[in-house]
Length: 423
Image 1 (cartoon, helix red, strand yellow):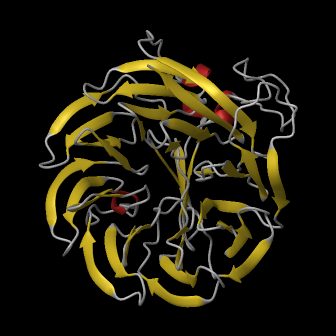
Image 2 (image 1 turned 90 degrees about the horizontal axis):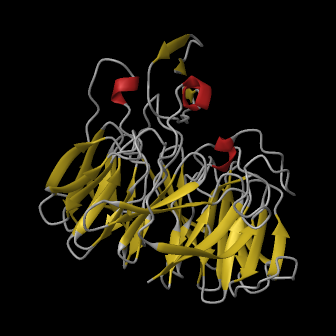
């Protein structure tokens, strides 16, 4: 069940299989969790016959857990360090080298920011960028952690900033993209679009390629903007709102989008997975879908996780469905990530699943839980972090990051770990 709180404050109940929150100045969606508890028909994690050897090679705790059910606090990875952020603003640069003893000092630096961080972390070109619930953007020296600049924006940031070394792009929940000078934080330009009265809580992650930035919005649009000036190159509808109620017309493009030499790939909630021609925004192919998590690609295929937990693989050239996997339906999966020849997704209890790209078979399963504090012990263990009161405190929602074949993942509790496929 969930409740829709309308502009007038009336509560209306609906049946719905997805756990989400909305962000809008007028309305919000509050999806209750009780249907997913064990005694209320919760779908248990399936038993998996392991056909792939996966080993956890590194684990840490980023800090206090995220209060955002759909926060995108994913780590950022450089050649030497793993950069993490907690919900209360603790930023840490960890040594990437694995040590067998967890009590050794393995931090390059740690900084406490005086703001709740909701937008995740970006690292590159000598800076670490973060943004928070109050709209403040912070730039830290990636070597020392010293603050280089801070810029105040109007609005909440719910996805990691992106940059190319000259310009930083910040997407705000109010339907805006803000461009900043990467070295000084000076405001350069802003793009604004309309926001429906009812949306999902979250935004897409902008993508910068050469002199163009691509981004999706809550009104179902995908846009390409000139990176230097902010001028619109093109706008394309991933999906047009349909239906007679505000809920039926929610078509947010909230997940990550993909680029290749020809296409931009994007997905919308209650809408479609599409391939769009990069040069002019013309649709190349489209498939009906309901995806608020984003996509990944590999082996000539586009991978989409539906809101009910179904995984689909599409041929990236023509959009034909290659395979579908329904074993993880009802597990409230997180965003998909390709690691070598496998697709990895997490679920609402902190389990990770490895799926073969070629045929969609689930071949391995691991549990993150409390990470370095309690290893893979029972979730009720009282570790050094906040007391976990339910298994869903360890949910994996954010997209994982792959660097040199190693998968780095962060759960809602704040545990961060790295997994290596042993072939």
